[in-house]
Length: 291
Ligand SMILES: C[S@@+](CC[C@H](N)C(=O)[O-])C[C@H]1O[C@@H](n2cnc3c(N)ncnc32)[C@H](O)[C@@H]1O
Image 1 (tube, rainbow, N blue to C red):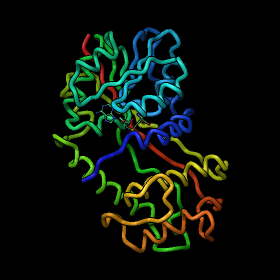
Image 2: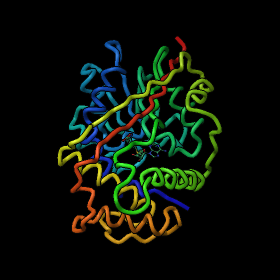
Image 3: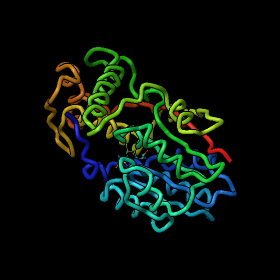
């Protein structure tokens, strides 16, 4: 059983909103149109994309929606008055979302949020019902696992990052099954958009690469990202230094290696390495409401 404490994640989501500002600005610039009047970011987290959308289309009303009040408070601070922030859940059907947006939307963005809805197809159906004729739904889900580490780190078995991805994938399955009323989605995101009635459905995957040498800030984000992932898998969190496995997501040997890699006082600390980079591919699935 896995239950995500979104309030506990609020600070991290705010940090990633700030850290991903360049990516958000680049993607927002490709999505908005001069004619867009109403734009929504559903499951907005720290509000990074909502802010970028408001900056890319200053004349539009941008609404940032999230189901968690603490997360929304972070989004409100981050977006600094550029965006209207509203509390609503995709698990409650279309009506609360419709009231939150208050007008048919020309563009709805939902990144890594629909996969937390109990019934993902129902959530997509609800989002689609909020679109104006010709409006677009852009769903950022999936892509390729990010790469940061050399295959052989000189400690433990090579391939550590690959095994972390596999462990996280198993964690994700249990997280999905733990959602009350969880419904499987046994097909791809583009099929889900098509079933919701959208047309011209396609996927644009965005590659971003930060080669060596990472700035100290970027390196810190990479290390922090690994720390968060390990804490998630070990059921620790928020600054706990000691890693205690709740489930056997990772082998004890890999867990020991991670502990050393994430120990700022130890000889293997990742934050002291010059060979870390950041390569990621994130997929954005887009469909259009009929006119
Ligand atoms: C993984 S975070 C992604 C945040 C942000 N969209 C991003 O890409 O960085 C998932 C977000 O979805 C929100 N969320 C989870 N379940 C939701 C639901 N049923 N309705 C609306 N938001 C939800 C969480 O509170 C969290 O802010």
